[in-house]
Length: 351
Image (tube, rainbow, N blue to C red; front, side, top):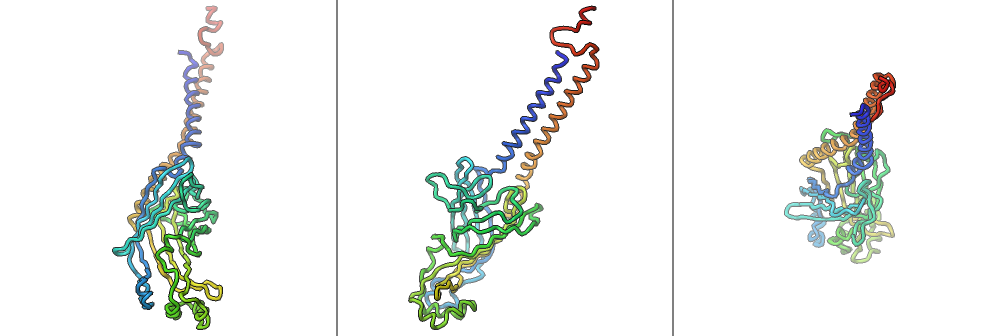
């Protein structure tokens, strides 16, 4: 075997390791942070609700029109139904269970698989108009600032995401984000079961239960000027507090408060009348634990992928150093210079 051959082999291996490091850093690692095409996650919540009793309201029993403090549970399933290059189509379903009643809702989003922001949906796919905003998930390594926006499906509005600091959940570092929404309800599925009008006498019976601002607007003269029945609009108000794993973007904990308020226009000014539903939900301890395990597992993979290129480059450097030392040692032991393949040095031919 040629004396030079071991050095050539080491150099070749080093080149391959450098190429592998580049592939891991530029291809494998970025793909690992993309939203997987087989994503299918269910999170469980528990809390309380206030629900409108339509029969009591229409009968004039305003004192019992709202049933409050109802224990509820909820199941939220987020799954990718299809992928189209860097765009994923997501089905985000929430089913609230209140006693024997189940209140299901489902939304479809098209999102960028890297940034998790809303994207243009593929042809023939109907999706919520969430372009440029987050909806169902945060990205890994999300910015610790107020640069994100959020799409609220109930009001079909895009609102700022406020970064409030860091915390710990399930033994992991999380970013805490607060999202507040207050806008007219535009979701047809929410509006469909709600009354579009109320008899004027029922509105008059509600006045004493209203906040001071609404009471001040609904004077006897203002009430007399209202049409009968009184047309209603609805205001959606919600606050979402999300604890997002800093490394993976997984929401390890969430608290959601959502209220729908009936309102009418008095002298051109929107005037709240009464809440028709209120919901407060929090991720259950079991779900939070499962999400923590998932984040820890995904985090180990991401850490490995981040360290792998450095390890490969260090190994390549050691191989190159070894090749250099072998070459140098061979030259030191060959007085007339390195031996070439197929021929000996002149000093050997003269002997």
